[in-house]
Length: 193
Image 1 (cartoon, helix red, strand yellow):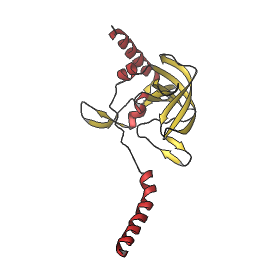
Image 2 (tube, helix red, strand yellow):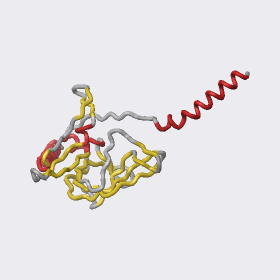
Image 3 (cartoon, one colour):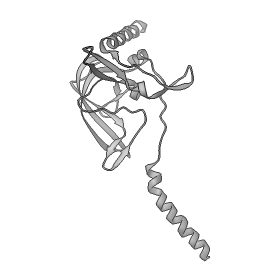
Image 4 (cartoon, one colour):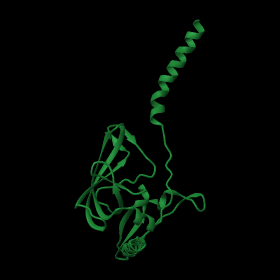
């Protein structure tokens, strides 16, 4: 009886010691199937060029969510008000951080092109997460703006090759990118009955 009680105490102490570590180390995998620019364009009801203003994270329904406000500079597809909010899973609330692989995060001041869809309570979400987020950079030497897709550094699943590879648009001139989006929009319009 004494040995059994001692074993129980040791196991109980071990379980109590492991509980916080186990809670903090739970992870989930994210698999995104690769989407072409044409499919992203057809899927997203809203496409905008916007500038990030601020981020805020809060608990909702047992999860941490980050809301990012943007000032819309141009609407490429659909309609959007001058200021929008994008709501995505994960973020930092208090001393807890929730990280979800494949979710884009934005910094105040940066410019982006976003492929968006309606989400929770008037907020929007990014279509296919990192695949629908394109960062705009100014190339001072060439005096032009370029876009780089977030998935240029995040592996997506290619159903044809059945492999995970980081692919995406990298440093494409913004005007070329916009022409390709407009061509995809025209193609989608022509294919509708």
